[in-house]
Image (cartoon, rainbow, N blue to C red; front, top):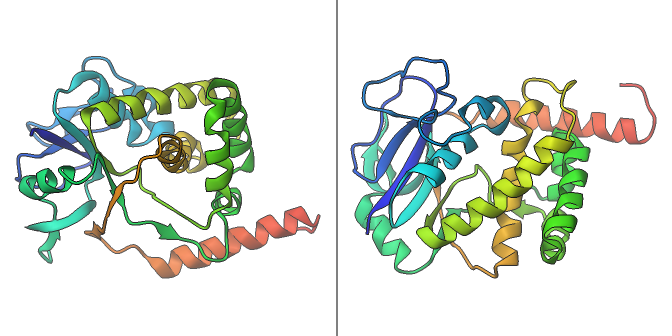
Length: 261
């Protein structure tokens, strides 16, 4: 089985030597390739110019439209599925080709272990971190284009955990199904959503929304994925993230109550 596990990368960085991994320079349009031999996401049919708002999904789209394999996946230059291949400064372990093949013999879809919010639902966490209207408009579009997924959307928004990072590995048929469904919703959302006053961070909205849509699609298709631990090659700065999250949450609550912030 040939598996292409895309590594979304935008700057010079060490890449795994295992043949399953494909370094893909995302947002490549108008830029020089950081390292010789890396695939660019502005070749063939592509949406490379949308990278500022679609993030690593410009690479996902390139993979869907241009690559051939039996299974496809997405990981990041500093974030991989855990396995048995020593990689990185501290020789952390990432998935190998043979391990991927064994896992795909057990399931059609592999995803990261869920992230848990505990004091927030998926909806409230997003609303406090970004703009709630992103999710409201996404729900409206799902209701119009694929209403059978609305119960899954509502269920996922009320949960307190979810699969994040837009990371996955899928057999070809599942990957094609998911990609067609995902980009149909995102392109319609892009048409309707006014992001002219969004910060550079919040303009990455379509990548953020896609993270939430993965579980909706899995639920709608009644797919039970195989979960795999994620290896982070760099510090996650949890202290800063927690403080920023609490600040956003307080601001959101104050705005709901009409207080000044």
